[in-house]
Image 1 (tube, protein in one colour):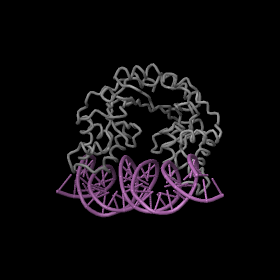
Image 2: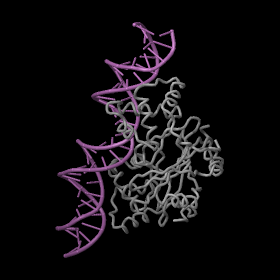
Image 3: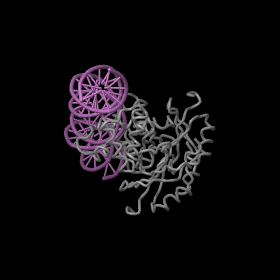
Image 4: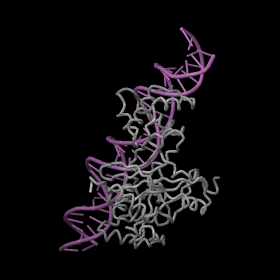
Length: 152
Length: 152
DNA sequence: ATCCAATTGCAAATGATTCGCAATAAGACT
DNA sequence: AGTCTTATTGCGAATCATTTGCAATTGGAT
């Protein structure tokens, strides 16, 4: 729990076969739509909305409702991480095997460009915050916003 | 910009008349609905959703659409601050005159209890993050989540 | 008291996400 | 390979937060 920020999210692109094996190992069926979704996520190592995933898919490959259901499944199994940039659409990124995917982003408020951030909120302070108020299992969501070089 | 975290958001309940004066000073009309909304926010020094504001209002006092429009206005004029706990509904808090309202919360993931947090992401690190990627005017959104004493 | 633009109420539109249900297809087991 | 069982899908309708068009209303300056 404490090492969350030190643990690098490797971002080495995982093999599709590795991803489907993970699914199978969790006794979930590896269906056409699920494989296709994982492939899109693999090819775009950036936070993607459900609609962007749909648009990245060969047409007719998968229904939008199925993407929403799949993202829930993948999130629950820890294979993807959900992010929220506050624009009303959830975004998803693949999580490396054995990692927890916790990290943050710097988002351009004009062109929506996204940069992945290595820094994290100091673990000791988070711990102190939880302790101060008697909260357990404290995590945080943190995203940075600003104007990218092209936009200012 | 740097002192953001040091500046205490006083939370001394502002007078309603002070609030309406501020509105008038910004050459906005002080209408019935707006005064009523400000009064609800005044009496509940916690992040409130638009629906919660509506429910806190005398019945028939104001239409939900008007609340949405008012929250935009109040946000633009800096009188309220918008927060996002990731549950799909925006929440609003009054901002003291001359303050920027920047702060964070610790939210119980089971009972939704909210505690206001004094700590903030270290300004120097934020600055370095922006500089590293050539971003300007960098801010952040940060919320903490955990289980409150009653819920664990 | 009057007038005009800002503001409101209402109902319909949007956009993201969820759900019900019948049809379909993975994976297990012959 | 063929069959069976159940998870999964597609489709369309429902939901939820939020926005918008438009005609009716009302602050506040004159």
